[in-house]
Length: 338
Image (tube, rainbow, N blue to C red; front, side, top):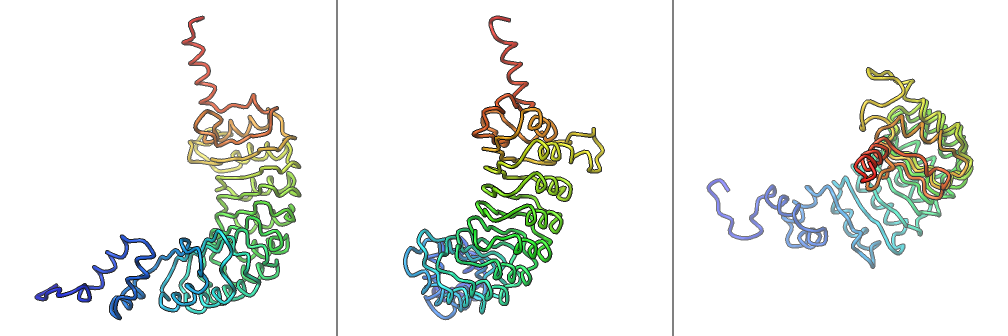
């Protein structure tokens, strides 16, 4: 300190205290905030990220007591093994944490629509929301949230069967145009109508998980191939209505993008699809899947780099990426028989 002396812990400058706090776990941060008024004010002002996932009991009461103090939070992680959170906790978060950008509420089975309505009004700057496994939310409440939280970039709705309907996805596609990652895993009521709404409304979509969305057909994949040029990861596990037509649309999508390299193939591993899961898509044939693999160099079938996932598709065992073919040729060349 300029001309001063640190006589005790309470005299530590706020900047130094916050640096120290950044090195300790969240439980210690909470304890430190109760040491004295100066520390409480410093931490409350400077703390931006907090996780309470370590709390196995009374998380709801902890949120009610802490959140009013930590009003500057931008990230709040509240993952639970067993449901603890209730609507009053989310009401408090929405009332005090107006700058919140990242919120993880996965497996909050006790929450009702009341929580989504509260977030819609209080946390309009949300960019990343995880409500996977929250089975009580309705599609009406999810649509309402989407109409207010228009800055969302990442949305995890895995297992939210009741909330994730085509109607809700149409609203999401209309208002949440900045979305880059969406997880609709096991939302079995989703059809082509909902997925196509996302494809047309969210052109910056990078990752979409549709595993277990048994109603979707080739039309969804074709819309994604045509409208989402930045798509890097697509999950189609157990989407058994998907046929070769969808695969060829993906393979040919690269031809429709302005490029300076040879048509029909990405320039390098950083362009186009990097992960594709077509496990249990039993209607697909080797030529169609091979066409996709040939178009996107980042899709690998070789050992240790599996990014083209085909579990349960025994008829696709002949599909191989370029490096797997090269490795096979090299091994054959060095075989004693040669």
